[in-house]
Length: 413
Image (cartoon, one colour):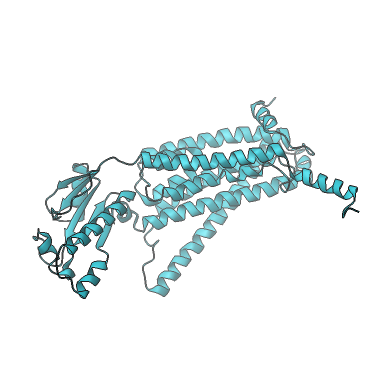
């Protein structure tokens, strides 16, 4: 005698098949593969777009450092102040200026002279227009070179050996960080995280709201006194305001957290001195990006009957792609990849705030990004209306991707 009756297995089969849709499963896996392919492709693109040659000006740097072949070294005269250093960089098309200092005279040139007193190891300061990955590689190279020079000195005692293990003094003075008045790395990371919170909050609110109203037939009653376009616009704008409220609240708590950490640890508030212009720019791009995704979410949600059993929920991973890519490119905000993606509407919500917080972005790039973003909002609004109108009153059988495409192409009568 079997453990379950035939009818029990029939119910079990029905329940399993209701949740298992082969075509939708395949589409979900293909979507995940496509997302991983995009992330992998962007990483390859970022590596391929790295500069083949780094132009560095040096001041008081000893000749014993044999820089790698991808560094073009130019010796410079000492500068009076930081502004003169940055001016020299721009006049000579340099990526950075490296200055070597020591506790005593900087005229020592031989390895023996340089390492005769291990307490006077050289210190380096790199002046750059913005942060980049090669700066970490340069720091590692200088550290290894100093250690090799120290090892050339004979008869090392214990004190010298301990000194040998200590890292070199390497300070980075970023023009972008000086202009922003805060830690640009923290600001860029904060902007990316806030964008992620806003987008996923928007998606959750929209999906639950529209599908519940569709199941309860609320929309059918409201459409007797509203047009489809008015309903779509109202949903998108209302959700956008809710997300901006969450964004501002989260930002306020983050600011209070940084202030509290600085007060208890006696350190510096990493967000101190953040300009109002930067905050306004980040909010504008986040707001427009949220509006774009909200229109997409409203139209997409109208095609779903039940979020617990729909096979289309894999689409929810799409907004995460720009956010994931930002974390791979935080160290290269001025690179080719980040620049291009900051002007693509679907990725601008994450990349442009990150770049604005990390460096001085040209006005032309900001303007182009705003124009393309506004244009894409208009296009998304038009197609969201068509999808919403064709599917919001349908219930019982979700439309296929082909049906959704046909509804996008159908013009209002």
